[in-house]
Length: 300
Image 1 (tube, rainbow, N blue to C red):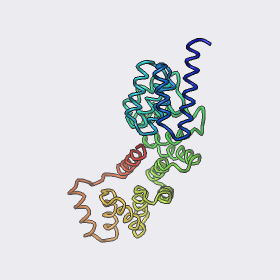
Image 2 (cartoon, helix red, strand yellow):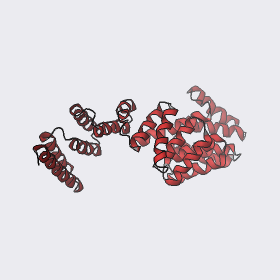
Image 3 (cartoon, rainbow, N blue to C red):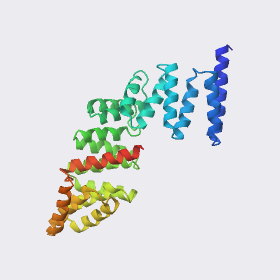
């Protein structure tokens, strides 16, 4: 066995020891060993990756970024390091920094890279590139987690509500616990004009999470459109208790009061909204806003 082979073997043994300490919930011991590996063999990528993984687990994102950046300076183009740093930026919501790194992985793109790129392209409203990345995943695995849902979201953004519901239903058939994709499906049904299906999906969201504000708001809105103002008021009042400053809820309540003839209540709310310059122009703006807020909250 040559010198470099013995060095690599020694490094692997030490990394296994570090992993053992992690299993015993001793991250500081593991970090100490991994730093020792890096000091002995500064070109051993797996040590950087494992140490960065620990930093991320401890939410020391700056430390993980610094470590991976230093590693890439020593080993430019090392695909595992590129992937790790790109994924870190992606999960932190720093898409502009993630994109150039993930694009370097043309010759090594696993499904998670394709989906990350699709998400970035979607946020940039580059729907064609986004769909292309997702379809590459679905061609190899029609049931890959999140792929059908992400394609459904792309169609939703393109106002292709029929295809949006098709792929979002496929995703939820595989994983019915996704709040984000169920919200997308409920939104697609609503914008398609299928109010009963939309109501069912928004109701499921409330059943899953009784504090889910968008569910209460949209159930109230749909019930009003279905001509059930009394039921609508119950849901809207609950939504307002969760988010007392919501212009969306106040506007629907004003419409409700106007519908049942309580004109003064309606006028008071409309005047408050106009004074605050908070009139909502259309349904799509409301749904886009609550979906965007929900996704940002889940990414943190």
